[in-house]
Image 1 (cartoon, helix red, strand yellow):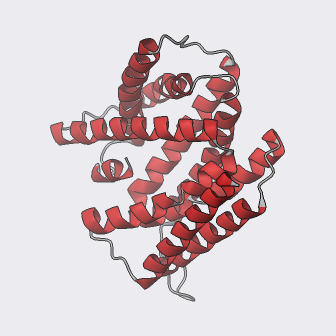
Image 2 (cartoon, rainbow, N blue to C red; image 1 turned 180 degrees about the horizontal axis):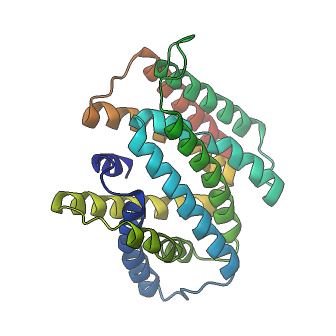
Image 3 (cartoon, rainbow, N blue to C red; image 1 turned 135 degrees about the horizontal axis):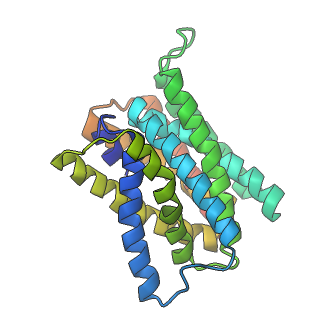
Amino acid sequence: MTVCVKQLHGRLPVAVVVLGRALVSVVLSGWLVRRAGLNPLGQRRGLLALRGVVGTAALFCVYLAVMRLPLAAATVLQFLYPSVTALLAWAWLGERPGSLIALAMALGWLGVLVMAHPLGAAGSGPTLPLEGVAWAVAGALLTAVAYVSVRELGRSEHPQVIVLWFPLISLPLSLPLVILHPTIPTLPELGWLLGVGLFTQLGQIGLTHGLVHLPAARATTIGYAQVAFAALWGWLVFGEGIGAPTVAGAGLILASILVGQAGKQS
């Protein structure tokens, strides 16, 4: 999904990207909910709407960061969210992280720090645009709130209903911004927008099922794999180099996933 966003090169306003993603997702989610014979309104509509609002705000921040930063850098900064998710899940849901999950989080953070090292040499000052960094950090914090709300909603709502409410809220939130700054996508851009919607839909389905069936801290620890994938896509698609620190960081992140899985089994 982030590869598709970055391919748009920032020419389209981010609201157009969010709207395009929502249009694709609401069609696919609505069809899946209807096919499963579910009530699309759900039971806890206030929390479903809140998850949609927070998730939409997080999307805006993440897309802005991806458009302004190297793909690996944007993803590394986004991975502030698992620790925040664990803390929120402890405070909100009473999900106290076990020792193996805490170790997995520490390994993941260490891997993120190792991978972030090539982004700026010591003493040389920041090499990333501060605006992009700010959007990435804001996206990470909002993502943590959204993930914990999904975990709470999983106690009463079907995962497909949770997924459907996200674009249902994103549509009315993004449409006024698109109307204020209308930009017509080109044919190739329409293709990338379709890719954003399709890959986000697949990711949301997998993520929501994971958060419903796993404690929030454990589920998001597995998500550290995204950092390694971002480095790979950045190298293959955008020519962003992968040095020894990136490889070492990816190894630590893989270790965090394995430790997290051991925590799940125990």
